[in-house]
Length: 172
Image (tube, rainbow, N blue to C red; front, side, top):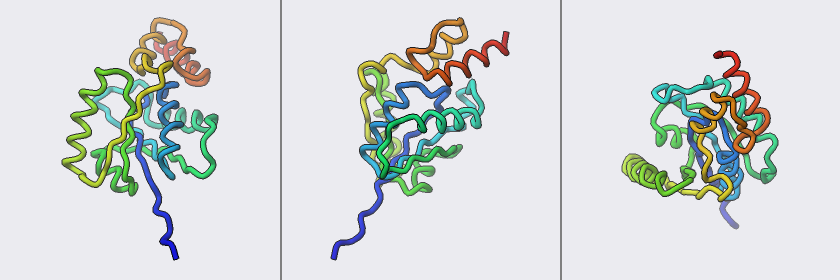
């Protein structure tokens, strides 16, 4: 008699301010590695987020509904404001999913992975390299393009682009 298969749970953390096609690419690919994916939305106020935590969660939830995800994988969106390793433990995760766009991301992510490993040796960090078409996308650049009334459609969905447009119209 076989023991029941244990769930592989991964956490993909970020501020997602706003969620981009690059984030969605990593989410979709991460669902091939886990049975449950927790998208951990950091409430990190030190990053001075453009959208509120509620707005970011709502955007992510709307976006993942449109993704062709495996039917046997659960995807949840949750907020956290504590150490990532503690959040991951609370969720029962074994994996931390991190996206890499460029070599410049690697140095920071490498340090973070080492720190997280010291704090929680049972957690593994998995790096997913962004698909080539999404390697140049960064939420900060998307916000700057929107602020200057540029076209954000190559980087975010129409719904997110509209939210950016509305936000900047209201700030004028």
